[in-house]
Image 1 (cartoon, rainbow, N blue to C red):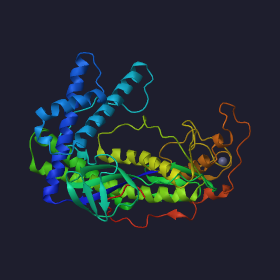
Image 2 (image 1 turned 90 degrees about the vertical axis):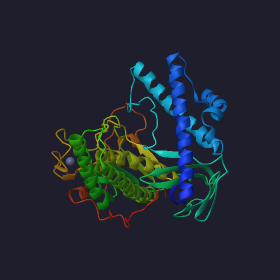
Image 3 (image 1 turned 45 degrees about the vertical axis):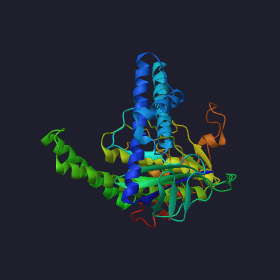
Image 4 (image 1 turned 180 degrees about the vertical axis):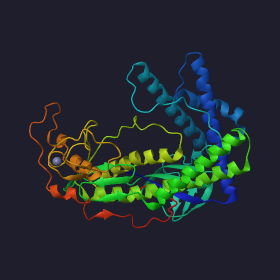
Length: 422
Ligand SMILES: [Zn+2]
């Protein structure tokens, strides 16, 4: 199994400038590849990463002689990365032309700038990076201190160094040499994800968003507004010390919000995947989630798909079957007890009285129950219609109360600087 772990680093000033040099080299190679690619397009030629890399190797000594003493993998993987984003864009264009566009819009690759993201691939192939306790040894850079030890033992496949809100991180990808476990016996758990409540499970577990996240998002919105105001008053292009400070604050807030959220996700998805034999989730309509300029809103949306991504691989790790109910399954509108359909249900209604059997349904819990009884589970053959009404769940009367006793509260939510998977 491939596992990843992102760890904050404590580089010396010298190492930091070494990181910046490598990031600069990667950026330079990426931008060079983009320039070549554009020039190619103009004469009707589609340059792939396989053509670009040998070309880069021929010219790099002339156009970037300063990169000679840096790790060449930084540039190599930047070009491979570029090739991938060009492919994604091409794929998207083909779909649009064929009239079967789906998913998010994919833009043409853009030139990277120093003030955006800084990062590079630091390994020179599998086995070229070693860790020793809280120290990582990187080719061409040397010993760098880490804030914690690498969580997984095994061979280190990839190491990426990048910077978020002023802190440098190393992301490790480790092959731990273990096989995936077989699917275990256990209950079928329906999981309804949302924005207000992160997730509600049919076994009564509720994953609330931690307070630190809600307050962080609120602060983020406030800073967003202050930046917008400053732009309006002083003009977008005019330099302002105050706005610069606000932007730095926004980056820090954003990093913290993401950390708190990820930590919460990891703990909750592990708990679900460990206790279930099978997990049923709804299929999110990603295209429907409008790309939003405002960071705070985008973070909330990213939260839902991020939760499901993690839940999916945790299910793999802990031997639970992961099932996506089909997109048109009306998990919120159906009464889980009598299958009466509430056509008038609005998005803001958190609870509703069933017109068929009269129970008060908690919106999220009802949806989770429906997912755990998704008809597709008992009828793998689709398009046959409702042959038999799925049995009412055993916990039928529970729905009129608040979701069961097992309210899941994140135990420990202080600032966790590095968390990727656990
Ligand atoms: Zn009902």
